[in-house]
Image (cartoon, rainbow, N blue to C red; front, side, top):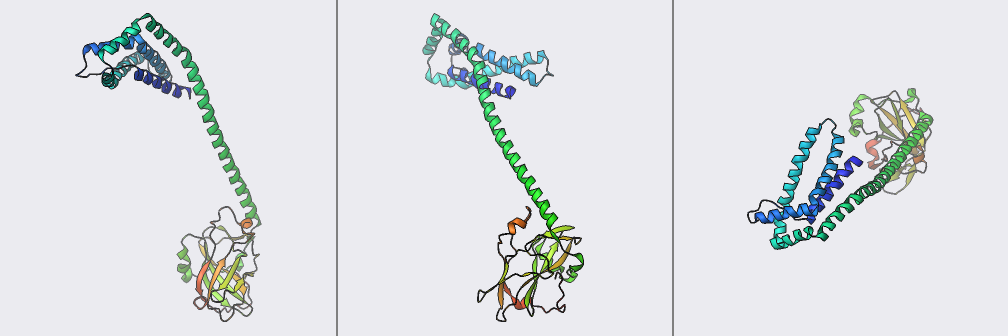
Length: 339
């Protein structure tokens, strides 16, 4: 930090010197006498010496950053850049000073620096600058370091907090996976190939498609086509599932899975990668008058406790469903399987 900060401070101070002292450039309206007087003031005021002093400090820092360069290189570097800086100073500022200071006024400034008081002022200014500059640089370095360190500390704290939260989520996910109910593979029915196209409309989403609605003697079975994209995949159907009659507003709350899996608990499927399986939920028996429904998965108080951190937060809801479009009759009476 010190090597980077010091040159910036030095260059700023050199810039201040060039601002408070007149400078010269090639100007067809400027006389040689005006130019010479300006240069004389630069020498008398100590600005040239101060600039040389700071330039040497800058060069010494640059040497540390480029140790492969020899002394001859740095001597030539200092000479060339000193001339460039002096030339640039005159080029930029002389036209401005010509607008505000006449030659006679410039001579008066030179006369001041040649006077005993002017010489004392020059000596005192250089002493003050040399004594205060190291203290100024040190103080600024300390203060800026405190700010940077504080910012780094805050970033580190935020990073540690994010890491802690991530680790907590990972730990919780592992616990949920360990407690998940593994669906018996021999009770799972794979969707036939001729139905794949319908299921594939969801792309790589794990959101299931509504497949069928079966009015049974004592209940209503709603079957979904569930995409499985990994060798081990978790599933969750909320206890907040309900059917709502669009006409009457009557609600039919979910009773559970057709296959008997525990409702409100994370399910796991293994060994059905790139397959589509049936998942069926049981609801109370729909009235004969029910023609159009919404099937909604509404928030349940225990859902958040059961869902892993990678849950997409999307509910499985289906609107404006005409029952006749999905109504089927099953030939598998009283056989409880996952379909």
